[in-house]
Amino acid sequence: MSIDGRGVQSVEVGGRILSALVRAGRPLMLRELAAMAEVAPAQAHAYLLSFRKIQLVEQDAGSGRYRLGPFALQLGIARMRSFDPLRLAGAAVVELAEETGLMVTIAVWGTHGPTIVQVQEGNDQVHVNVRAGTVYSITGTATGKIFAAFMPSKIVEAQLAEELRKGARIQSVGTPTSRKELEAEVEKAKRLGYAPTESKPVTGINALAAPVFDHSGQMQLAITLIGPTGVLDVGPDSADAKTLLAFTRRLSAELGYTPHAVEAVAEPEAAPAQAASPGRRRRSA
Image (cartoon, rainbow, N blue to C red; front, side, top):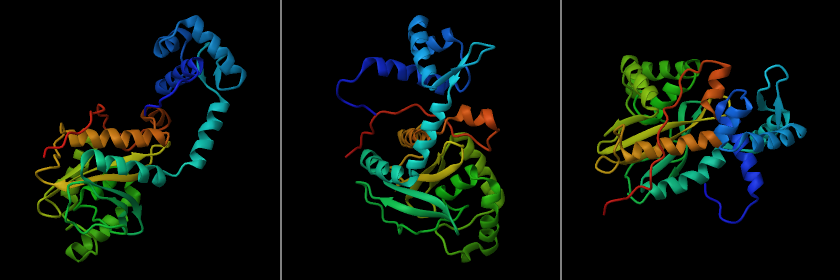
């Protein structure tokens, strides 16, 4: 995000040093930290001394390495307490719909499975019956598959078993398939970082769904792009896939998600694929 206006350069330099510690996800020696922050070691040392005084940073007495301090943790906790993932995503998908021209939905895991909580229309009108409160099948939709791929299996399993038992009688969008087919789709979603569907469950309509994670690495919600087959490209190298992944990666970062930090605590069930930030999408007439 670009912010116009003149700021305080020294604060911004200090921010680069703190950002380097966050990106590293481990204690750093002075020279290594200075190199990552692109400042001279002597300059970094002066900033780190001030940061130590206010407990933003602390230094290990034995190794001399620097790590984030107690005050940094307090700041993070305060941020998490005051931040609502749905409010953040709800405001952001408005811009995503405008950028892509596609319908965008936000879904959470509800009592009956993947449940839509917000629908944002795009310029390309899509004739699908989707509204807040709509429940998606796990095996028959892109949104459902992404929850199956990145939510803890113990949470998904009960609803999945019920869906497969009822088959076409389920009261949700998308015709259930099979556990075997879902397993293949889950592996694909973990590899790509998103789940695609082509002309399913609605003929002529494609979808791409990707997860948003919180600071602990838990999936909080799914963002889904929906559009006509001739407009929404679900290929792994498509501009649409890259745009969606960049968007969900940014939302996850704003919720405190850092893949290396989560991996350092415990091996996650899956990690989202990283995508290069794409440029603005140009729509054809």
